[in-house]
Length: 217
Image 1 (cartoon, rainbow, N blue to C red):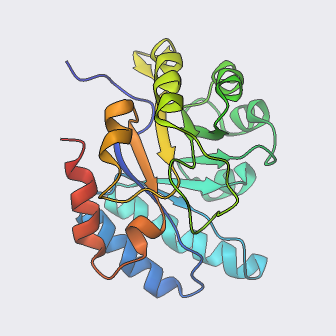
Image 2 (image 1 turned 90 degrees about the vertical axis):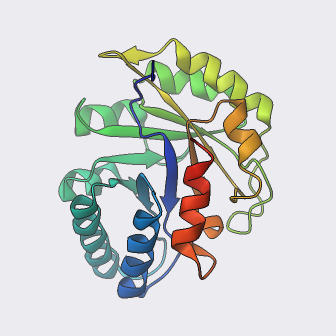
Image 3 (image 1 turned 45 degrees about the horizontal axis):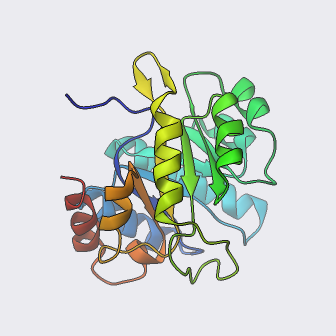
């Protein structure tokens, strides 16, 4: 019997820092063709107007392709765009506030780094997934704290007891993941693998997404 999850099992793309929206849309299409289940829009540069315009374009495409669309950092923007949810880090605001603002029908996920205590706090705030990492050295965040397979196992054990409407909280792994190194992370209990460079950093995005998706089958 397949366990129901509050966040999709499989490939979770995170957008690279590209100002070229058309290039990004084409890359997302390719990843979707390869089986990507969810996308997190993460952009730190550009004007507010430029970023909002890009976010709206991506939200429209993800809705068309049936891909869960998550906004990084900003639950208010997620609400404004009617995105599927938000991902919050340690300094991105209160999880309880995001849950209240978005409602129970939206996804709230959070970074737990390498700290099971943060995961317990997040679970108490009714998140839909807890993310651990970086599992491997990350070119995007070279200074990121390192998590281990044991943190994935602990997170999975914590998540197993957290269900709503018969669906449990998911465990996401992030940081330096590729199609070549993600298998042990999935075997340790990750329901989803989040990739930036490992998915969008090469020229064969569709094939890379398909290889990652196959690891879950």
